[in-house]
Each structure stands twice: as structure tokens, then as C-alpha cells.
Length: 187
Image (cartoon, rainbow, N blue to C red; front, side, top):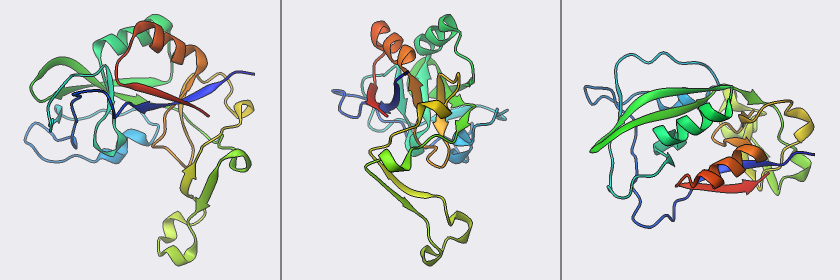
């Protein structure tokens, strides 16, 4: 059976940069949640990321709100591997030449295996968020059911879309290529 991994940002990379909330070309904040909905986007204008503190540029990182930001090296690797189900949205990073892109995964799969997770909690009526009742409030030590994944190599799990899941072959390719900023946790 295939293995899958959550791709996380290596927050402990020495001297790394930290990308903030995305803004448009006029400096106005844009909706950060649109990038985890699993749909193709057609942004109007240029998306920019302020950097504070500045530091070592990474091939892969999370900006504020877990927005996935990658560089051209990352994109070229995915192109060579024929990875489907993603959109790379051009973006600018303050003070860095680029090019940079938002990695927008286009697949959301219902695959979290609640029984095997370390802990799951759901929103309840008493949480005063009626639109979220029955949805995940917490997923710790996530485990997925690989039989639900099909042929997907990269996706977000339904109900916990801040996570990005990769197939083992993509994990190994990122490691072989020496892509910086990555950390992998088996799910």
C-alpha cells in the first residue's frame, strides 16, 4: 500500500524568511482562504507577499494562513514529474526577484481516518458556529485512509484543508532535488 505524507513548512530552517498575508498591487489585503478551497482561481492583478523578517529564501514555505508559496525550481520539478491537480499562481515576494508562485491544490479528498488519528474534535452546536457544526475543529496526529485517495499524488484532506498531502514518490522527488523549506510527516 502506498504511503502518504503531510508536507509542512520547516519553521526551523536557519535564518529563513517569513512571508506575511498576501496583498494586491495597491497593498490591500486579499482573501487568504480562497487558496485552500480546491478550485482553480483567476486572480485579478498581482499578488504580493510582504516579508518580515527577511532572510534566507526557501523553495517552499507557508505564508500567513498556510498559503503555499514556491519558487520556479519547485514548479519545474512538478512539471518534469507530470504532476496533475495543481495550479501555480504567479506572485511576488517583497525584495526577492523570483519568480514565485502560490501552489493551489485543486483536489480535496475525504480521507481522514478518524479512528487512527491521535485526536479529532468536531464543532458542536454549543461552539456558536452553526455553519461549522459537524466539521473538524481539531485533527492531531492525522492519519488518512489510502484506499480513499485513488490516483491523487497531491491534495488537501476534506475538512482539514490547511494540510497538504503528497504521495511517497513526490516526497522522494522533493528530497532528491534538495528542495528547501520542506518537512514531511507520514499520515
